[in-house]
Image (cartoon, rainbow, N blue to C red):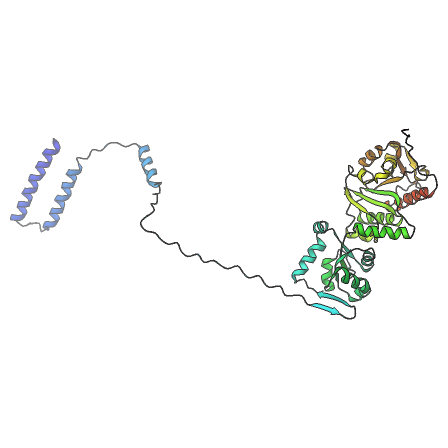
Length: 418
């Protein structure tokens, strides 16, 4: 009601002012437009006075401001009427592989050999280098690395297949030209020449000998050929198997294999925990012994009984060579010279100088009962032990002497079922 009275009063005043402005000019000199604007502002103030104002809490204000600041993104509506073609895809063609440059073969009339000259930048070099350095790849391909003229010649004489020969000194190759020429003719051996300073990258020696060859491991056919050669020379292998236990030094393992080949023994068993018999140091220590005697490596103690010949399994004797005085005191050990009886086949277990013979070896010896003996080599006061290869030499040649004596072998007499 108050608003209606105020509105009628304002409208009558406004008509009065408009009539006054029409009939009489302003004496104050103020333009008519300014007076009109002032009246419009006053009219707006009266109209806004009808708005009802209510008190608002602070929480409500903060809530509204928060919603204003985090407005939900509007969902994009796909326009079905207009279809835009996707931009064209530019496919980058793969880079062309460089065509390998064929290696030039050099024919040496003086040596009567063909070889290829290599550098470290040649792609073939990395392949050969991986073969030489990677034990995993060598084991997979059953290959070995042989360095030096003498050992390479020994491998060729034993019938090993030489797949590659790398040399840096022509005079060293000239000393093997006949054997290498025959291998290149029969098995297609590939020969490569590299600089001497590059051969140091390939070799495991401080001073490379100038010759490095990749051979296949001895095959059964090659070992049978060597056995036939021994029988022709009346040096048939003795019924002795040497079992290596905890031999961690490659040179010692190579010397053991060399001694077994010199006797000769029937075979060498390398149990798990020993070093690799085909490692470069072991091959140099063996001096070709690995090429002349059968070697079974990475054999567990559970698999050891399978290595005994089937026709001698019932009369197999087991000997353990022990040098540890504490272990000797707890076991009934005998002097190696006092061995009275030996079997139709004999296992000689020998351990490393630092670790000795393991408990698994004694457990295996207990399986044969009274046919197992622990033996030792008597030494002078103050001397703890011998080198493992030296001790093995004494024991093996003593066993050979016993075998050559008539009536030394024990014979198991089985009752006749009749």
